[in-house]
Length: 466
Image 1 (spheres, rainbow, N blue to C red):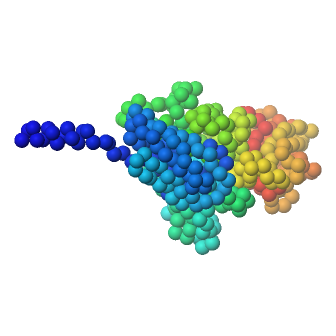
Image 2: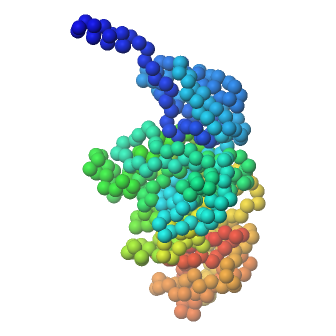
Image 3: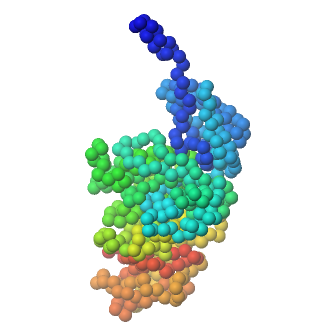
């Protein structure tokens, strides 16, 4: 009897191992791949196997060989925008990706204001959501939402699936990403794929690798599971669980909406976000891809007992533009909510990110610019503010003056000031300050910005560094 069992086992071991080509979940039916480039695919199969890969847009078959562990990777030439197509993988057993579109792919990341779906949070709706459900169906606008996953060490796969926009699925799309993608669809006329990897309340540190945080010794890097004090705020855990598995997926660029969690640590944010952007680019190995990000919207942080002024974080966010190439910020000074950290105006957020992408990545001319504070001069009792990127001149949204300016003298005490505009310069003065040395605009947690340029808000700013 023992001989019969041993013989049976020997026969089983002698049979060829069956291991159909397996792909990470991001490569699945309904996916969107980046057009007119070399697109990376990877996965596993039988060890040392020849895998035939056939693309139906050109009926071309190429061969890639798996290594001794069954791992393989290949880059294929993608066509111009179109589809749907099929991609076939065969190592003796065939796997097929169906309904594949070719177009523009963007990674969408951050914390709750990126994660916030079109259906909103409980008692926190998204403006225009019902309208989009009724009218926004579009088989060529697709989204893949990465399931939340906090990990001590980098993992190789995510959980999620691709879905196209229709009345049912739009409710579950990231609202900011949806409005961004919808505008790209309209302006470019090509399929758009949005890969959303975000987690509400997450910190910038959580999306970073340990090496990028070395300049910040106060940041604790977890060494074992017990060190993970927060699943979404602890350093490195979301990079490991929700970004690392996507590295190498060929895309056009990144949109980012995060910063609220870092308000109490605002002093380090510009450097930390800059390091993160550069690190993502190095790990992705796709050059200095565009990185467009939202400035956090105004909100009364005293409602959650935070004592720091969020305008200091917004100031840090603006600095990143000058620290990192091909990175630009969408200003949301007029799109906040005094009593809610999740503003309803996600359409403004998404469309302003789209303006940046269309102008700076796709080269569409004539789109408006976000004007920025440039410099200040003082003449007697009046401060005179100049702006960059303001060829159309700045203006006040609600008339000829604004209540959001303050001035201070050498005593560093700020007083409300009168502000008016003449030929693209803002003039500011206060009866309480005879010799001003500093000006601030909307430099507080909550302010509904009213300084505009070409239909877009100007960021809060200060001329001092006190």
